[in-house]
Image (tube, rainbow, N blue to C red; front, side, top):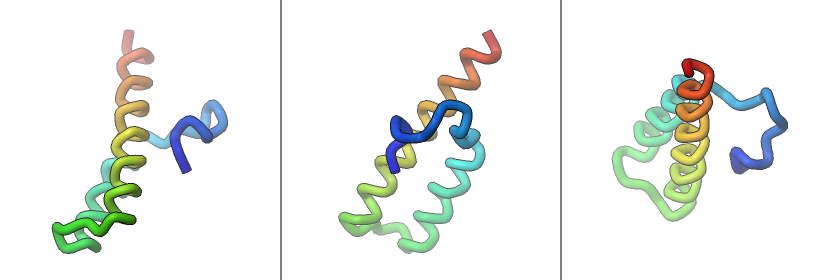
Length: 59
């Protein structure tokens, strides 16, 4: 699921997404398959959106 498809207000925090990214790397043993890389890319996009949201809130 891409971050753009999430309803407003349901975006996870950057910390939650970061934890999922870490878990993905641990499960993969440091080498991502094509499917895991696609998941990782979506997670990084979601993480960046969460960080932007935190910056906007802080401003």
